[in-house]
Amino acid sequence: LRADAAAPSVRWLAAASYHVTLVFLGAMPAEHGVVLRARLPLLLPSAPLVLPPMCIAAFPSAAAARVLVLELSRSADLTALQERVARLAGELGYPEERRPYRPHVTLARFSSPAALGPAVFAERPLPSP
Image 1 (cartoon, rainbow, N blue to C red):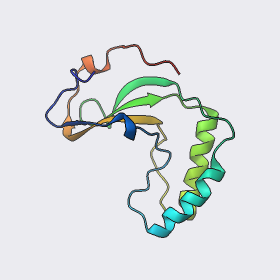
Image 2: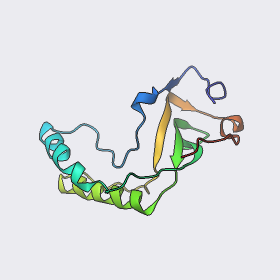
Image 3: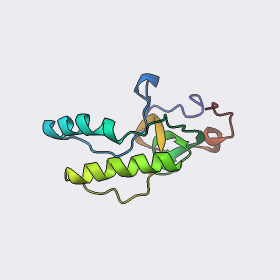
Image 4: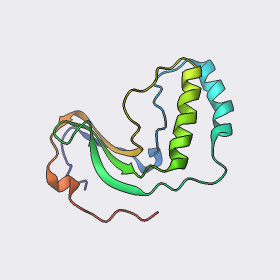
């Protein structure tokens, strides 16, 4: 995959920085961080979430990729958690996201839009959960 998506403008993320974004907040005041650190653990489900991988995708599109991601299957538990976190963000004054939630792990970012060919998205074995 790295060879297929090799481009001067690509920056691959280190595996240690992989995460699933539930709500993007951007820069925030320090007091919001205090509230979030206190309240987020209370929103977590009692059992670990299982997040099976679905496919490799590009945002906003393969023709003008800014981000290469591993999309994840959306379970009822993940959806419920994302909605709880979004409500908390709304209580803190963050605007509601208008785009539908697409759970994913960001793999790479492009400094300028990249046209990704079909080889990047060719079927490959995805890791098992």
